[in-house]
View 1 (tube, helix red, strand yellow):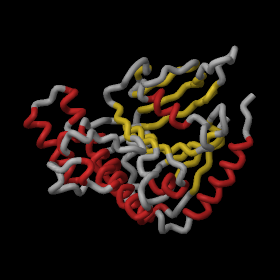
View 2 (tube, helix red, strand yellow; view 1 turned 60 degrees about the horizontal axis):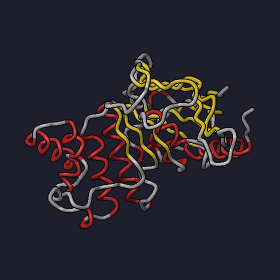
View 3 (cartoon, rainbow, N blue to C red; view 1 turned 60 degrees about the vertical axis):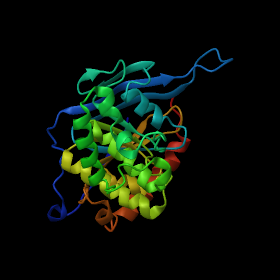
Length: 283
């Protein structure tokens, strides 16, 4: 059973959260397990097992845990790329049995198509949806402007820096107007300065548009800076061993949140939990 902690702070500091405590549940995992068959093994070992959590609409939640504990497996099941071996996954109140149209996935690699311009890369999801070319162009240009890529619509991926490419990937992710975003370490390959700038852009967009997001990161301060809540996983087979509410201001402004004195003790607590999680064995 996961332990839930609350880190309180003076109410007058707090930025209003777009996540209403009474908001409907957007993502739910009910006693989920996933086993992967391996050659030569009579019984498929479980990557995760007994995973239970809920995420409300408009909430940003980060998952942290030891390498190989099944964090990415959770995102793959939430988006319908994997089917659970046991239990069930629900998005928007509907059981996930295949790819979910309202979900968008952003990965560590930008995966931009080198033969398409930046604008046409951003338009890709809209093109798949069958949107008119005129609509695609307007939506793509608006997102490129918001992601600080004005003047680069007709450039190609090889002409952009790593940070700019990841901005373009973020614009492409948001272009289809998803209600739910799954983010699998999207900034881990970037330098520290570029990472913080992109974190700021993402946090503001999620806050302003009241999107629901499930975020994977190994960066503990990044998790605290971006999230309403953290889920801590054990080693394989991964399960949720602790849940922590981040009751701090500035969820829309991670640069400001990073300055708060509570960040250090919280990060220290997470390091302790990860040591516990690495030794945890599910029976």
